[in-house]
Amino acid sequence: MTWTVAPEHFATPEATALRRDYYGEVAGRYWGRRATEAEIDDGLLDDEVELLARPTGAFLVGRYDGAPASCAGLRLVDPVTAELTRVFVRPAFRSTGGGGLLLAGVESAARAYGVRSVRLDTRDDLVEARGLYAKHGYREVPAFNRGPYAEHWFAKEL
Image (cartoon, rainbow, N blue to C red; front, side, top):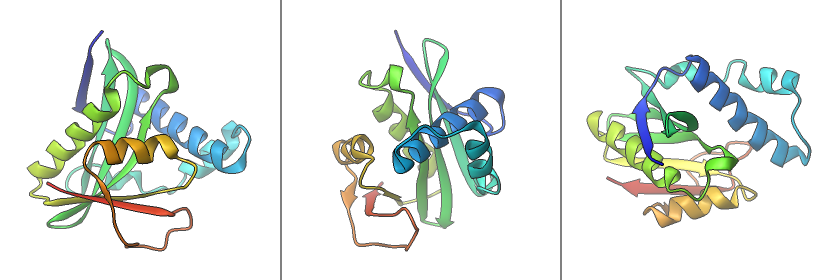
């Protein structure tokens, strides 16, 4: 069983399904119940996903033995800083090494843009994500935004 990670347009059927799964999980955890399809549709409306494509960013899809299993987005903040977003590994593929490979892919895409620092924010309840970031060299930093769901901030120098 092998992982591959590659850039993919955010609107392909596989990337769209992964983004829907991502939003369904993070919204469901936040609300304490499963998100409905209508709520997922609403959450993805005007979510600025178009920034996750050249020239302002990238979207990556991880595949496990060819099956779409993970995704992550990169959005340029300025010429040397990018933000990591929409990091998601489908539950069936967790603990198989895909999260680390996904982060490595995003960091490679960031370097190709000339980025020197990648940052992100996340929530208290996304414990697995915080563990993944710490394991791969992201360190907690002071708040750099005031997003409604931002409770922890991380950064990594490339």
